[in-house]
Length: 112
Length: 121
Image 1: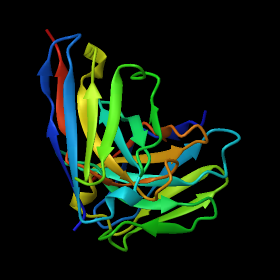
Image 2: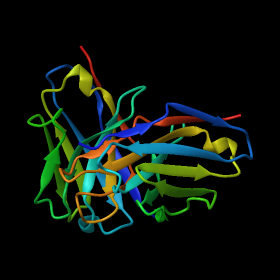
Image 3: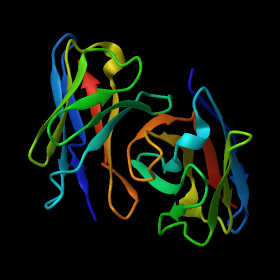
């Protein structure tokens, strides 16, 4: 079964850029993923679907500051011009041929 | 505007039952697979169950198989999760979630507001 690995934490300064990484387990480098954001005390929000070729489709209302890219089994969420409201937990999600949806453990982003 | 409004949840004793509901607005409900996802405090999300757009196909995580039942009413635009034989490790915030496409395999592209389920004596 596919496994998604994320670093537990990341930090960057206000106005800077940050790359969050989601790593697909061996043998699953062609999988697409989705990125979700969970701000404190809020429900998760879908950010984008990210394909293995780096193409991505963002959800409605997601700012241009959010983008994605791919390299091999790595899937990146790139946030530029960081704002205080970007401080949140970020989760990647994929899906296997057995239908079960899989989530990464999440990265807690701190905006300094 | 796309909305998923959840109801149900609360405190229940181990071995008890609870029913969660989710009302969908602002999109073609029958064209979307729908899931339930839960998140325990301090942990990442865990997929629980999914139902196809027609309701003909259902799938469950091993942790809930045989205890939980997912269902939908496309005329009413509602999704339910009947939870039986509840255990302490079912304690979590539960979210209904819309699939990006009609396929059961795919991304989640919208979430409900969440409802807390606490299993405790």
